Each structure stands twice: as C-alpha cells, then as structure tokens.
Amino acid sequence: MLVGYARVSTTDQSLDLQKDSLEKADCEKIYHDVASGVADSRPGLEKLMSFIRKGDTLVVWKLDRLGRSLRNLIDTINSLHKKGIGFKSIQESIDTTTSGGKLVFHIFASLAEFERELIIERTQAGLKAARARGRLGGRPSKLDDKGIEQAKKMMRDTGISINEICKVLNISRATLYRSVKKKISKDI
Image 1 (cartoon, helix red, strand yellow):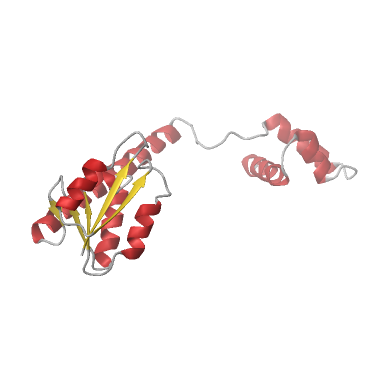
Image 2: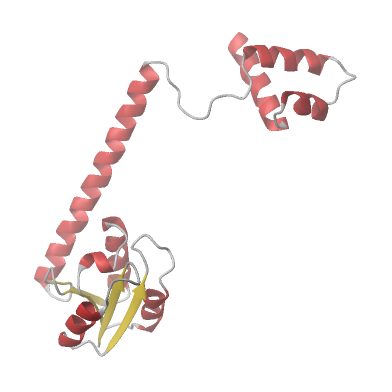
C-alpha cells in the first residue's frame, strides 16, 4: 500500500499541490500536518507511523516535507527500512524499494555523516585552539579569588553555618564547595 504524507509550515500555505501529487502517485491514504519542519509535534506523521505496516511505502512530495534536517530524514527512513517499509519522494525521484533508490539514499546518508564528522572536527579544533590561548570555556565562576578567600574565612568561623555563608555570597552549597575545593587544589 502506498501511504502519503504532506506538510506545510503555516496555515497560509496550501496542501493542495502535495495532495494532488500524492493522489496522482496512487496513494491510498494521505496524512498531513500544518507545522514547521522544526516542530516536534506532528500528529499527522505520528498517526501515519502507527498506521503504516511492513510492505507499505511512505510517499512524500519532496524530501524536506518529511525530515526536520538531513540527519532526521535519514534516521526516519532508516527506521522505516528496519520495519520493512519503503520510502518514495516524488520530486527527487528516490524510491528505496528499488536498488537505484537505495543507492541514492545511501549516498545522501554518507554525505550527511561526512558533514557531521567535519562539524565535530572543526568544533574540536576550535576548542583546542581556545584552550591553547588560555580560554577554558564554560560558565564563568560565581566566586573570584577574593570571594573564595572570604568564603574560606567564614567557613573557619564555627558560628556561621554553611547556609548563611551561601546566603551572604549569593551562591549555592555546591558552588561554595566546588570553588573552595578548586582553590585548594590550585594552591597545592
């Protein structure tokens, strides 16, 4: 069975073109959503996924109608493949029920994986370069050296509770202990 899926981003847009193409492609059932590609909630797609069965083929007018990103699209199609469900995109002429369609899809998947790896490499190189310049990244400490010394002094005074110290310095207990511990290890 061919099952269609159509999506538009806003209520100003029309599903007619997509629905007409899916009907022309002999889809027996068509699900649709009016939601942006980044929206997590797509009830039409969720209904489709619970309806579609092994041996069926999911048909879309265009690839970007199904996935929020290339990675999401590939994950969705791989999930369909594991369930024995085919995939077909009308505009891109991709049909994973054929060997040629599987090849094209795997090339897309390889390119997406390559792009992902490049992003990871560039990020790691940037972090390494920043560390070499003395930047550690992350959130700045709430307590500077002067604040840590004040905290240590207050902690030595047994008449002041930890909660009172935290209130005076406007920090949490975890921040207090972490800052003092970090300062002690630096001094050693």
